[in-house]
Length: 95
Image (cartoon, rainbow, N blue to C red; front, top):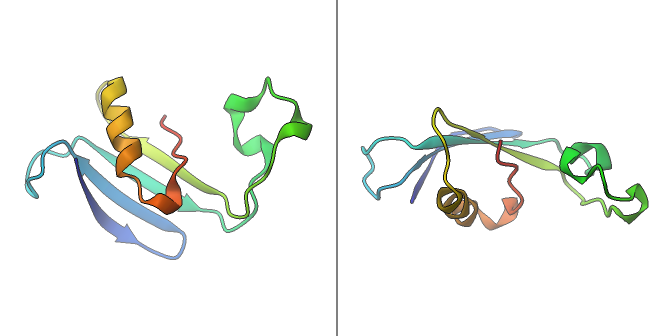
């Protein structure tokens, strides 16, 4: 999987992800990283609604990862995408 950064600002980074290692191959999907520059909150994670709010441990900095695609993403592609994310952004939310 090829991960290529297209935009990098203080709060936003945009990457294109390709299944091949060819720079000019077809783009599989895009990944948008948004750095909110604040502590995470329980409300930031809607998939944790069944969990007790008191068990939630906030992180120092909340970064949201959004995958933009126009086709179905297989489970193996989701795993490859997660492995391609830079170590500082290890909790992408695949939508």
